[in-house]
Image (cartoon, rainbow, N blue to C red; front, top):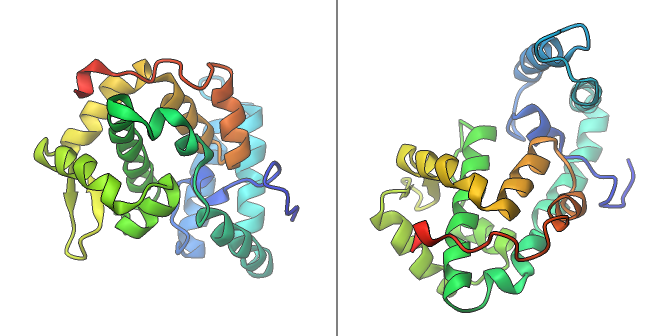
Amino acid sequence: MAADDKTFVDYYEMLRVSPGAELESIQRVHRALAARYHPDNKETGNIERFLKVNEAFKILSDPEKRKDFDSSYKSRKENPLPVFLTKEFTEGVDGEINRRIGLLSLLYTQRRVNQILPALSVLEIEQMMSIPREHLQFTVWYLKSKRYIAQDDRSSLMITAEGIDFLETNLPEHKTMHKLLEAADLGESRQQQVAAIAENGAGDALDMPSLR
């Protein structure tokens, strides 16, 4: 597997299964997605996604290939998402507003991919957003007060049904994070995700008055 992040594909996100998924689950999900995206399916056929789903299954169903993939997967998950390193997420009141939608987006993706472990720890969020927990306290307090997120018995954070409804209603207006989630849905690498959102410019539609 290529070490370059430009070629790295997140097969777990692509199949929407957790990194701890058993082979039986991977096989079941693959069959469903392969049927959905097969070119002969006139309603939902998509050759690009069909090929990527098959590639994901080929890697994750082979113990040795999956072991190699997991090594690359772990190292990349420990690095921050580049979009969160921009000034739109770090400076001023607008930075706080954007951190809220960014955190909801991360928790939304986590719940979709991993129903068994739908929460992210504060440490994981720190790593993914490259924002110290001291700077996230106000963000977390606000989202908890609005009941958009909740804590599990380990104090990890997870999105609620109210948070999902809010995000799905408002995300189309927030083009940067919308592009990021669309790219993640295809299992694209973090550099590919950044390239996908770069078309809009770093600051396009980052201001969301509805989050104030």
